[in-house]
Length: 111
Length: 110
Image 1 (cartoon, each protein chain N blue to C red):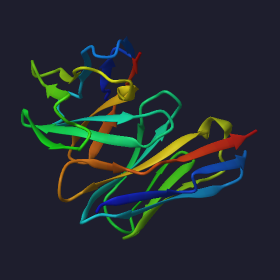
Image 2 (image 1 turned 135 degrees about the vertical axis):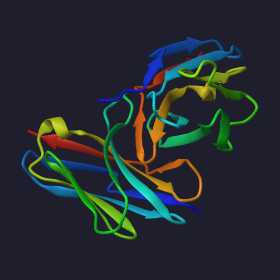
Image 3 (image 1 turned 90 degrees about the horizontal axis):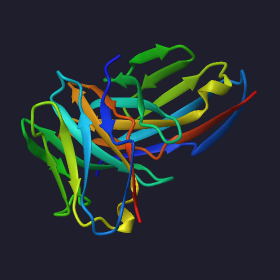
């Protein structure tokens, strides 16, 4: 079964610090995503990435956030100047046509 | 605006008691409707993709069906290990993002 891998599984950071969340999507997939889920709430879209550029982003995905695919296999989400309200599970997903798989998530705790 | 609504929010079943979960959607052209299972603290686990009205897919005790406005996830003779949150998401013809519902939290009591 294909798998999306995310690291770390849990990250604790101080408010104001920068964090980088990492993902290895499924190798033949073309679309990559970041979603987040605040505890007890809905899965929310952050950004989609296709052909080495952002194809869509939500209102949440402001200048504090950025994404990169630095080496053709990793897909990263950088969050600058973290705030308490950034605490959430962050999920990476990859899609080929209409099959889409999610990683196990990174639990980000901002203290 | 594209929207996905799931009902009920929570469902408690006795082991063996079959039931259905509902996902209603409004999108400007459906490319695919997805069902996922999510266990606490874990990522959504892919179950099914449905593409067109009338389509059905099955996996073990789960069967998903699709109409032009909604999808049902039927659970036949559930077991305690089926306890999880079931998420529905749609992918529209316009755009690349998945729109998620709020999920149905299923508890199956032995």
